[in-house]
Length: 216
Ligand code: C5P
Image (cartoon, rainbow, N blue to C red; front, top):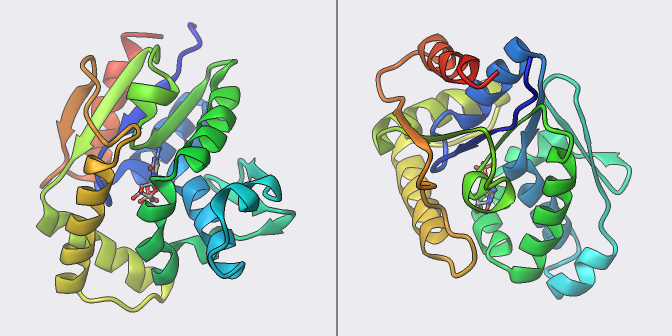
């Protein structure tokens, strides 16, 4: 079997992580959620009371553990569950637009994909991190459905939110991610677009597994 990398990009809450995790598990590949890495730096930034980002990066060490999908270890502390909270979500697109932050994380992400066998999800994976990925998927869904899914997700995690607020937040975050100067969210030319609106997790996973089978 060929060793391949799979890049999954798309706007906020389009179902990327859920699907990417399943695809990785079905193919015995490593799953990497790059959004969680940007969120980890955002958490460090908030905890240090918004310092200069360049200085902050010199003291940051991020490690990923492939347990239950992915655990994020920030300076030897497991911060995985903290990363989905509202303060991090509200500030992450600002932190992720910083050139030094992007250089730092893209470098780390590229090291993780060197030996292939990775399913990586994010915003710039197919365009910047692994431009030679064997399979690139661009996943979209309507804002209504994305907000609904995020609401259910939040309920399960015990995080308070309202669907209307989520819709506004998702649209705002997409706007910031699509209009930033460095590697904005955009579909790679050779990516296959999948609209997950009205589709089940199983259906989308199956569709990607079929596409992957052609490359393996
Ligand atoms: O995927 P998730 O919603 O957790 O991503 C959080 C934020 O991290 C995004 O809104 C975006 O600002 C940033 N991000 C990015 N590039 C990636 C992954 C995430 O800029 N590859």
